[in-house]
Length: 189
Image (tube, rainbow, N blue to C red; front, side):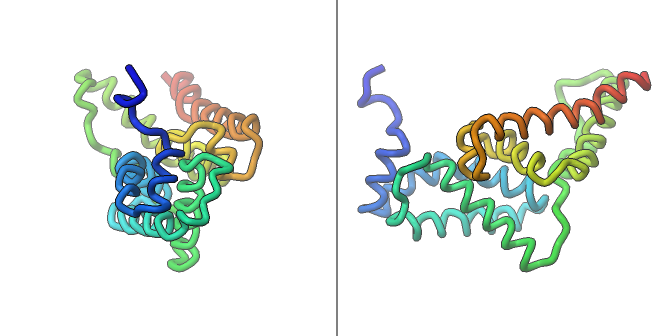
């Protein structure tokens, strides 16, 4: 595949968008789903997640002239989303939403065995509860990785940590969830 047929990278799109706001549309299309999933995982409400996603992209568009390109655009964008979500909680004095609540009770079409379906439902319920028990940093890193789709390097930039520290946060969060929800359930069986 030659360069003219491949997708332009973020750096090229950012440079174009800094002088022509119409070019920002490509960045929006590239990241809107990831930002929405991340915001939804933080607030647990569709309408709030949609509002926070819109606020994130509006702030990014307004701040684009000041983006210096020292880090990745994705890390910068998710840093904005992270702050928008934090502002949401400060304004509303709300508790964190239940990121997996919407999936609870929905059958997995790939699982037809009722016993297996019940097991998966129990695991999902356990994960939902266990997310609240994770340290805030571990939960945040996990949400950025799996709901936001960020790479460890980008998580590190957003959280102000080293890449190794970001990897460790995600690894420990997954290990905590596995221990609480899979290992304990396997022992019960």
